[in-house]
Image (cartoon, rainbow, N blue to C red; front, side, top):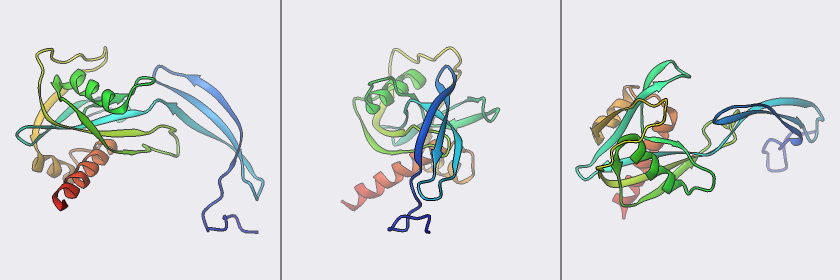
Amino acid sequence: MSDHTESGAPATWDLLDDKLLSACRVWDLRARRYRHPTKGNEGEFYYIDSRDWVIVVARTRAGELILVRQFRWGTDTLSWEFPGGIIDAGEDPVTAGLRELQEETGYVAESGRLIGHCNPNPAILNNQCHIVFADNVEPHHAGTDWDEHEEIEIRVVPEAEVFQWAKDCQIGHALALTGLLYYQLMERSLKRQ
């Protein structure tokens, strides 16, 4: 008996149970029990239940991109990345992105648009990360509004230099690199028109 569907794709396992193991401040650790639909074997798999995230590729009128650097507890290092954060319940991803941009950098944009999304790690996370592009951003008189545990370096970097940082592995945050990819795809698409 084949373990694949008629199309050749692997089978989708049957969900038997889903339980909360630990509730944390920004996500929950949960366990799901699954059964393979044809082989019948079962297993318990752990995942992080999280709200969706957003990152913002923000470009100034001069064509520079806004990067932030902050301490990341998971890697115990400072990390260069694009501004971003957790989307509030019921909040539109573009609205959330523009809010995070202002809170983290003090820059504002009149509008933004969604240029992509991804599943950050579908093996252990159930959420999506939305990538927002904001053009012609400028500093706002209100400044930043950091969370209690945020301490952020803000840098305005020429676009070519940002791509060089990515190439040289100075930007290692996977979601920042994904944002850079979507930005590049957007720019290529505009040049073809």
